[in-house]
Amino acid sequence: QVQLVESGGGLVQAGGSLRLSCAASGTISSINAMGWYRQAPWKQRELVAAITSGGSTNYADSVKGRFTISRDNAKNTVYLQMNSLKPEDTAVYYCNAEITVYYTKRSYWGQGTQVTVSS
Image 1 (cartoon, rainbow, N blue to C red):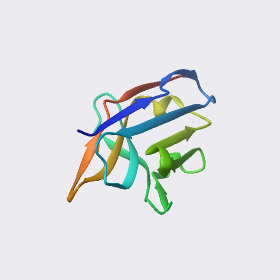
Image 2: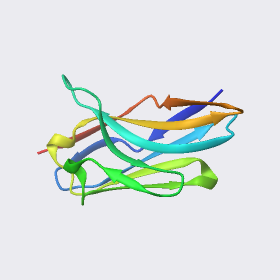
Image 3: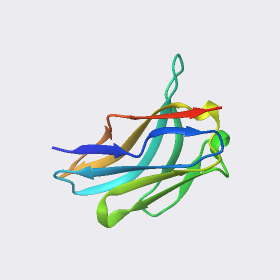
Image 4: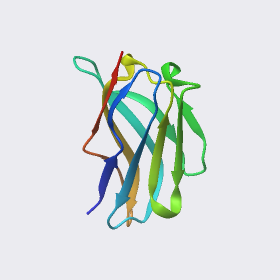
């Protein structure tokens, strides 16, 4: 059974920083893309940043230059460094990973971690 466990959310003032972590555990054959999504109240879930197994990244326009995604393949962990946070970054942040278990690949989600940015 595969689990994604997130940590690092919290309350921060505008202009501050937070670092989110997401560790995958269980019977894992390989992990392909990993990413972070967020969902604010009354809004759809949106992609924040993603990273391939080879390290290629892409970001939402709203976070470019402020957020950095990275991963440690040896630890099956993905990180999101968030700098210059704005109140509009307030949301529940979800980790996502494409994981192959034996010969079956599917998408897994973490439980979500709350990020609140005060003005």
